[in-house]
Image 1 (spheres, rainbow, N blue to C red):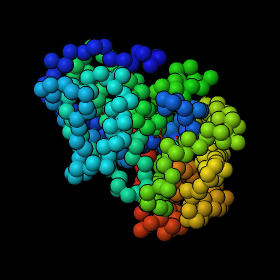
Image 2 (tube, helix red, strand yellow):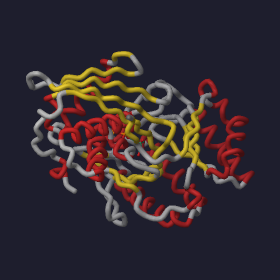
Image 3 (cartoon, helix red, strand yellow):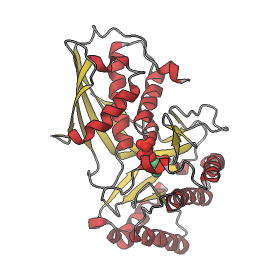
Image 4 (spheres, rainbow, N blue to C red):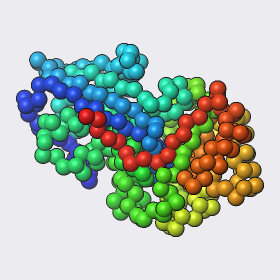
Length: 362
Ligand code: DP6
């Protein structure tokens, strides 16, 4: 697929006066991280993530054809029941970006109702679930206008549009494992949209657990977008992009044979490499907090003492994602309660696990 295949045919909007659609779309957690991009939202290395289940955004899009088309985007955003003009610039920029692929956007006025399953100030990035939910709603409208589009095109284009809103959002349409970005051993992979991981996956990864320890619920000091930008001219960028490609190659046999020691080594190295890039960019910055490090140390001791296959990963923030097989759910939950919860703000953590992707709400 190339960009041009996502340009919608000139559609007659006459057939649709008004309507609404709703989608629930999950967050995801990367095993191999996306960090670095070029215009237009093209990743500088491929990434792979687990799609989550309990952390999601629900979005309802109400649309009504304008009496007279003008040159503006008309929309209103209601977040968790209250108008949210603060979201306007991001959504306006998103509409502008996807206009070449959805030429009908200026012919409608929209009301966007959106809410997250996770607390707003949890430090959990909502851009992946939020942008993918909105992209899916816009695809539902496109399908109203053109019922001939296929399910596979619908999903691929939803991921393509979501990517233009936020890179990691391209990995939130399907599940439980999604690759985004071209990789030489994954033929179907693309820089333009996420694809379901196409190879065999061992039983042990079914229902893999992700408990998110909320170490710092504050707003990030440095946005991901700025962080990606700092990979341009970064002294270690080439080595980092090569490492990410190599890690994905190494993960292919690991995901098949279920070698969790090898899995842990790659996943933790990815998390620390991501943060190492932040700590060595110009300007440099640090998103881990003292409690992030405390938690990591304790995970390592716990693993040494018990032989557990618990490991951690990090996003661009201080929160720690604990990844572990379902068979360890009870023991790891007891360990979290006893030894880790007090490192979280207000003892707050979220229990999640892998999921199958977004779903339409009727
Ligand atoms: C650290 O997708 O939030 O979570 O494309 O600028 O919106 P934009 O960035 P975003 O970057 C997330 C990066 C990451 C790693 C990952 O999810 O792969």
